[in-house]
Image 1: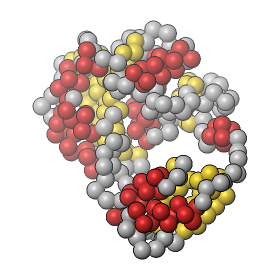
Image 2: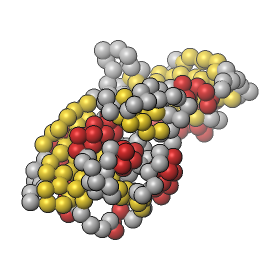
Image 3: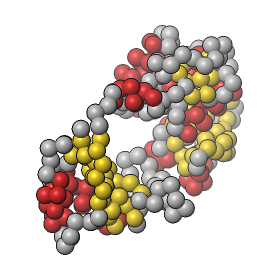
Length: 297
């Protein structure tokens, strides 16, 4: 058994209090929106790895402690460390031992991309045996089909991939886009990522799904050749920096799709690519967009 302790904190206190709680013996600490689920809920849209200018005005800091911990003493130590006169109001909840593997698996159901394509965790049966089913479990690399940007790219591939097409998945993550392209009929598949863990995950997932001929590499800067289709589901800033490089890998008449872009960032990316290829918003889902275009012949 563990104890979960929730403390209310102002935005300027939350991070410092979190660090102080870790120093005081907490096993883990997270910060959440105290107004989540209400009309005052405030989404945080910062890109992964970026720092938001400010957390929620009304935050809740959640710390996990061992059952033997002296929680009042730990809270008092943390409050003193951040200069608080008193411990903020808090709530303690018992967390019972559970089958964490089973609990985690229960949170991931098969994902229907469209009538042609499903993403199915290994512990589930395929809901539609006649569809294209990709076996994909959550892991260290990004891309299981649940994030809006992954879905946007998969839906585009279902329309864009022609039999025998060559495809470059730039920033392959789990390899899901390259694997989907292969199962949709593409010929040559190349996936690259700067993270070796992603490359390893892509290779393992491809083997699991019977995609034997794809090439996975961690030297994104050394990708060679041009492709009928280039897809990159990464982040806005690197997409802008990579514009001339990515477009150089698109064959004349070939197609490019980009995601990992928020709707409010669309013009920034379109402008960055304008000297090389005309992009337009192809679709939007939950505030994220897919940009797409065709290279002039």
